[in-house]
Amino acid sequence: MNSEPTLSGQCLCGSVRVSATPKSYHYGACHCSLCRKWGGGPMMAVECEDQVSFEGEAQIATYASSEWAERGFCKNCGTHLFYRLKDQPFYALPVGLMDQGQDWEFADQIFIDHKPSHYRFANPTKTMTEAEVFAQFSGDSS
Image (cartoon, rainbow, N blue to C red; front, side, top):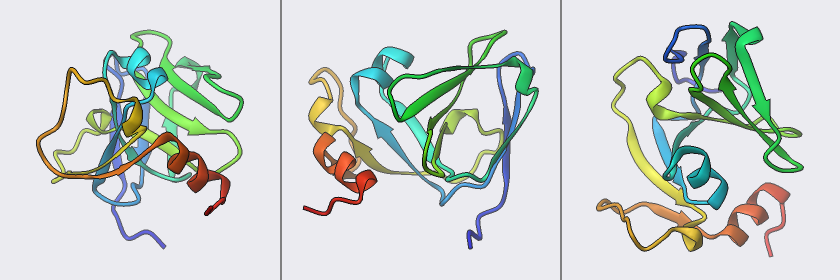
């Protein structure tokens, strides 16, 4: 069972509030083209499995960005709220959405083979390619 405390956050306009229990205080960056197009750069997110709840759900819009995932945002202000896998207990929440100033650790980067050359991060992290990410979520260890 997860021992991390529940965190809270809200969108820019306050119409949507979120409570979530992160897997850890580690967060990562996704460099896939969809995340970069959605937010103008890599998505910096914390994983929460399915330990996420929302207030103001009527103000949440979702976009099915693939067959297996959707992205949520506030209908009023456009704040990005989550990336969610449809058939697995997996939410990725933007780390900046959380109100508390936790001692976050930038720990990993995914879709590293899609990262453009015009930016880089200074600290070392674990990295995964697109193939490694899909293998992890499909259960294929080959």
